Each structure stands twice: as structure tokens, then as C-alpha cells.
Image (cartoon, rainbow, N blue to C red; front, side, top):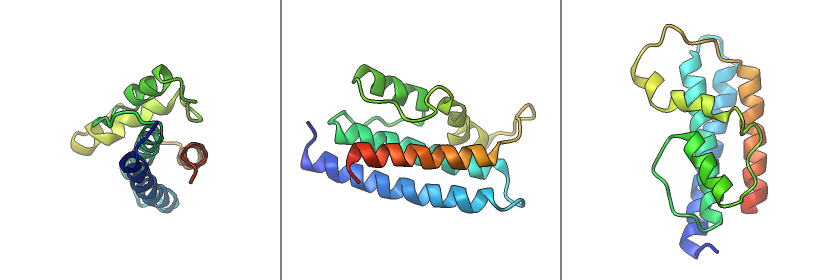
Length: 131
């Protein structure tokens, strides 16, 4: 069971995730924006929503950008996985590596799919945290 502090953290993280989700929607529509920026905000929104769900369930805060690791934590705690859990980890590369290094082997981001995924994960998190 989570504490009042953990529930407050969940609310803060969910609010910040929504800000990243808005950025994803806005940036994805603009062809002048690079995929790195869209992917970064998508990864951040999903990471924050997963962490909000974890806080709601009383799990300790994890300081990581690794979506696969966060999904493993959910699985161990027997918490329902978010939509697209089987391929969410592809966004982890946008959290740090693509922010600081250039990758020539990178495929173009399917922006429509990412916008949809972010919205679905947001709905999942809202349901699980009671937002």
C-alpha cells in the first residue's frame, strides 16, 4: 500500500508525463522536428507514467530511464503491464544515447504509432492511479 507521499509523487509524475505527452503530439505533427525530440518526450512520458503507477502501488522509486527494467519491476509486483509493453523498450534509446550521440543505423520513427502508444499508456496509467 502506498503512503500519502507516494500518492503525491504519483500525481506529480502523472502531471509531468502529460506535459511530455503534449510535447509528443505537438512535435510529431511538425515535419521540421527531428525524431530524436519526438522519441525523447515519448520515452519520458511513458517512463513517468510507469513510475507513477509504481508509486501508487507502494513500490520504491527507481532512478532509471530503462523502460525494460521498469516493466520487469511491474511484472515482479504482478501489476498489469501497459499497452505495447512488448515493444516499449525501443524508446529507451531516446532517453540518453540518442540525446548525446549520433547513430547512423537508426530507423525513422513511426510518429503516428508513437503518438498512439503514448496516449494508450497514459490511459492505462490514469486507470491504475485513479487519475
